[in-house]
Amino acid sequence: VKITYIEHDGRTFEVDAEIGSTVMQTAVDNGIEGIVAECGGACSCATCHCYIDEAWVETVGEANQLEQQMLGFTVEPRDNSRLGCQIDITQELDGLVVRLPEAQF
Ligand code: FES
Image: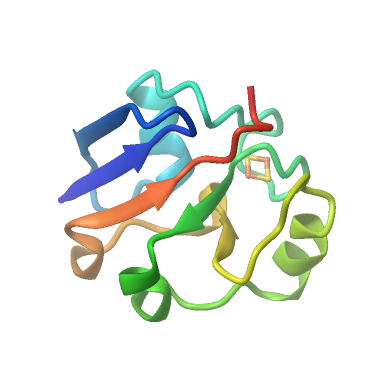
């Protein structure tokens, strides 16, 4: 499936993501700078913060409680904030667009 990452400066990367991977892992595999992922996907560092494109918010779904707590530690949480490591890639996410926060470098 295709995922598009838009860096805070507008650079856009469309990459192939594998089903079963995550939004965070796919970014790391493709060298996308705006995802740091210090904790390696354990939902404990909040450096894989991303903003889900409005058109995709419903499909991606809401963060669970633990993730919501972690989002509270990010620099600029918004309604469409999610942690990339907590979003599993599924067929439904083909075409997903996420934006990456400026603070995450
Ligand atoms: Fe650390 Fe997602 S990689 S919270």
